[in-house]
Amino acid sequence: MARIKMAYIGGGSSRAAGTMASFLWHGPEFAGSEVVLIDKDPERLEIVRRIAEKLAAQGGDDITVTATTDQRTGLTDVDAVLTSFRPGNFDARALDERIPIKHGVIGQETQGPGGFFMALRSINDMRGITDDLQAVAPNAVIFNYTNPVNIVSQAVASYTSIPIYSMCEGPLVFPPVVLRSAGLDPERAKVTMAGVNHNCWSYEHLYDGKDVMPLLEAAWEERKDDPTLDANSKRALHLAVVMQSIPSDYFNYYYFRNGVFRAQQAAPRTRSEVIMNEVPGYWEHYREQAESSHPELDPARSRGGIHELELAIDVMSAYYNDTGARLPVNLPNAGGALPGFDAETVVEVYCTVNRKGCHIEPQQPLPLAVRGITRQLADYQMLAAKAAWEGNRADAIRALIANPLVPDLAIAEPLYDEMAAAHSAYLPERLLR
Image (cartoon, rainbow, N blue to C red; front, side):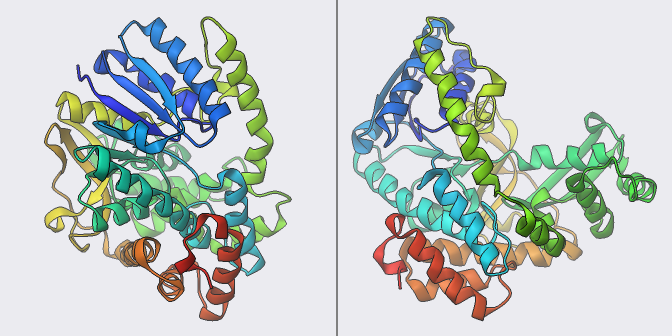
């Protein structure tokens, strides 16, 4: 077991109660540890603290939970920092989704202009976090879940010496979408994906030890006109067959952009606006559980369920307990391990995780048909990280126009200025007009 001091930045978020439930479910792996919850919202922070403190007492693993709104105090002498926060909350996400549509561009949380502005806001806060860590916990490791995880991780890796490992379940959850749409059992498959976060492809895709593509091709011919197949699964199966590689769901935004955009235009609410209607119900449930002597989170009433950020906790456990687990991680492409990508680019790949860090397993090149768009997104990622960390409006425009979802400079400039003005409270002055 690993006895550590961990700070959780975002400890008052709507996912925090489920994240603490997940961490405490792993309690024997962290027996005797201390968790410091950090957030800017004192009321919600206290609710999560009370739930977590009671769950910790029930677990019997001698884990203590405290909370503070003072970030530097909370980070003092920590070993690990779990970061999962959203500057501007869901109101900012709604702007990320809504404003691009006005300009004829897909609006999405981590892709295109919406993802770019989320990166600008997140990295602005992450700079303060890294400054505090260098002052009060210089040996700490960041385990990041703040989106867009690839751009956030790229910025910290490029501009600081603080180790950062970013996580996302994508490589675990994308293959089953395609396999189930083809009527196949994901348990019988071995799929290895790589690329940049939310934009990965498979270079290995086996079913009972054989290439799965003939099975997917047959399934597509059988199901392409099947009205019972939902749109996301249908697109994923179609794209896998055409490109001969199992894709991230997020490539729907690039390869089916016209249909996706029309659907966004027609929708009465964006995804964030739907979630905002649900958030009060989550907090009603959390307040009830904070008052209970034996809190028990209801998956149906908890944001994201009751085992949130579990991949980050798995990586953290493997790191501090020296297990050598095989897990997908976002980290710099050391030695050019993923062929076709620069060594300094943060890539999402499977790693062996132990006390010495995350070690990229041997990689195969991505198929040529999908390498180009992934490399373009990787280059955009580098430009976005630079603009967010140290750039000005001109740097930001160059990054934005490098994104494949932004097709025209005449669109990029007014779109950037409108979004920058809308998010000005969360951006440094250098990025404003």
